[in-house]
Length: 320
Image 1 (cartoon, rainbow, N blue to C red):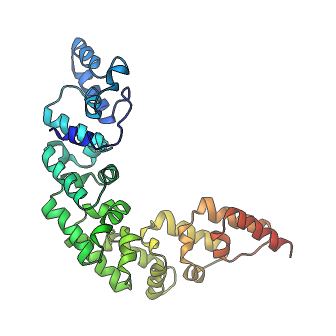
Image 2 (tube, rainbow, N blue to C red; image 1 turned 30 degrees about the vertical axis):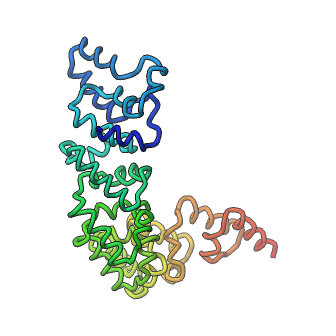
């Protein structure tokens, strides 16, 4: 059985018959440009069904096949299989050029392995869409070590593999030796002790580079005028700090805190979650509203409240 037929028997409904998958549309466009008018017209005539009834009784793979020009059977099977999983082949190919020459069988082996580890078919579109490199990964050399790491280093039970991977598909695209284990060692040295939290809540930290991502964030925070221990304490309280960009997040928000709100380092040490709020949508509007009302609010009260709670808070303070 062709792989696309296998996936069609278990997949979710595919795109409407009259809408081209993006990869098929791209291939058709290229062929039309390169072919003589008569050939291009003939090819176009085979792309779309003439009536909705003509595709109503087709399997999903058969319906999708109408959208593709004449291609080698292996390429055709591969494209249809990925489209049935919800993967945009054109985008995946642009991010993982090795996919062009990959045979369908190794891709099927990856899919089968991931399903054996608890992933659902409906998860594959997200996983492969975010990390197309997983499609051409080696089950033995690349994927098995990741799941062994989840169990041996983080204590994740097999029944919970899916929860971790769906939360952060990038774990499957990372080397245990070069990325996952060094990141875990670094985080443990900083004081992260809760393996469950790292696995289920903050797996993004495990796929973050120590040298390029995490260490520079601590250096920036310490450079604001606090000790490195204080910066580490902030990260332990709010691990999301490791995921923010210095120029787009830290710098403008801290400058606003100091320049417009009259705050400083002690404020972010006491409330590191300040950096998790949007400057344009939450911090600045709330600050201006409080200032206009002549109300001075602590950062946590001002930012954590819902819009309704914030309005009530201002009203109560004004009426005092």
